[in-house]
Amino acid sequence: MDRSAAGRRLARITVWDTSPHPPAPQPPDPQRIGGQGLRIVQAVSRLTVDAHPAGKRVRAEIELP
Image (cartoon, rainbow, N blue to C red; front, side):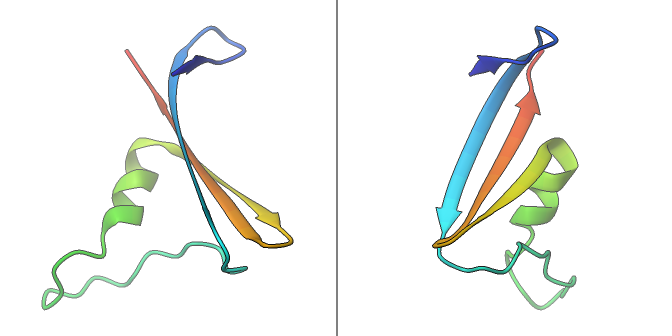
């Protein structure tokens, strides 16, 4: 948990991986279970992606009440 410059409380979640490709939601498929995590994260948070020589860092920031 952290505070933004505006004094809002934020939860930050950061993940790294070695793929150079940005995350992309999978198309809806009623036959598939799962695969909707990125859509959910995008709906409830601010998502940023930073490219790095060894892959990328993806960060979600969620404003807390």
